Amino acid sequence: MKNKTFWIFALLTLSIISIAYSYTKFTHKAEQAAVECHETPSTAESEFKPTIENKYKPAEKAPKGMVWIPGGEFSMGTNVEDESLCSIKGVTKDAAPIHRVYVNGYYMDETEVTNEEFEKFVKATGYVTVAEQKPTKEEFPTANEEDLITGSVVFTPTPSAVNLNNFLQWWRYEPGADWRHPEGPQSSIKGKEKYPVVHVVYEDAAAYAKWAGKRLPTEAEWEFAARGGKTGNLYAWGNDLKPKGKFQANIYQGHFPIKDGDTGEDGFKGIAPTKQYAPNGYGLYDMAGNVWEWVNDWYSVDYYKTLAESGKTAKNPQGPNAYYDPNDPSEIKRVHRGGSFLCTDQYCTRYMVGTRGKGEIRSAANHVGFRCVKSK
Image (tube, rainbow, N blue to C red; front, side):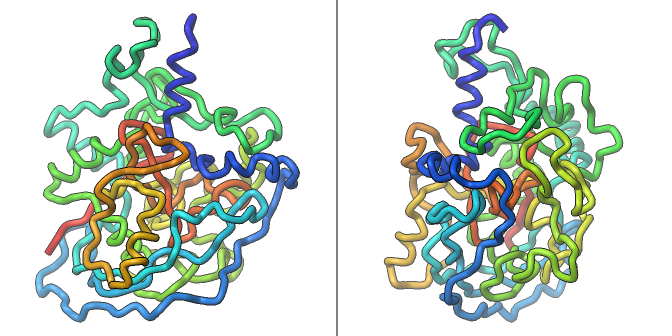
């Protein structure tokens, strides 16, 4: 393209890929750290109080592809103050402090929404995702007309090892990338019907949920479900990353983000089909890794602090009334949960069950999807 301004702008504003958003202020420390680091975060003295599940269980069978989540009272958040980049302190502060929350019972999709399911929605409604819509001059007033091309952001490994302080090194804006063409126009989802749908923005996920008679979960509902009835575990399956030497989620092993750097020790290099690992205590699959999941809450860096300072158990919290990210104050963001196939102990360990992600609401990439819930 003659004018690179649009692509650079698009990349810079794609905060769904900016798991690096918290790391910029740690750049100097990161550059001093080793390129490879395999230290697993350790928890401080537990501040978690027991999970108290509701006793009610519906008499009727759960809707197809969904499971019943009883709801109840639990401790939400994390007391892990370091993650990735060799345990640099402080980058999970938006997921602290731990606070008490109550949620009603609900049904939840047992897997992330798949290509097959999303295709049924598109065929039934004629829906066109944001990634398939041509960007407008209103959205990008400084871009040349020839640069306003449909597309989305795709992970692109680097030829060799790089410092991890600039995520633009391993992401590219790919014209023609969308949910049907996850790596670009020459790719397809044929044979990948059971893979999670990707390149969906918040409004795409919300539109699907409405069509399906469901909704996106609140952040509190998502975490209650991910914990599977357990109290204070580091991961959705327990406190050991590899119980009996086996990975329990599709994450990144090896040298991030270099070409062929992912060893695939967990069974997959890149995105995986759903249901490849054991479900959690509620029968939910892939509550860590594979693809990030949109939830309904606005993202605000200090929301947990606000809830904790109230001194009360938050009842069915719906998130803050407004978004707030001091690292990127002009971008409208909602919360992501669960991490993705690109999460690694070198860079982003947000497959830890209490931690958070965030995304600009109209930004898409090939590691972000969603699942739905339904109220009783």
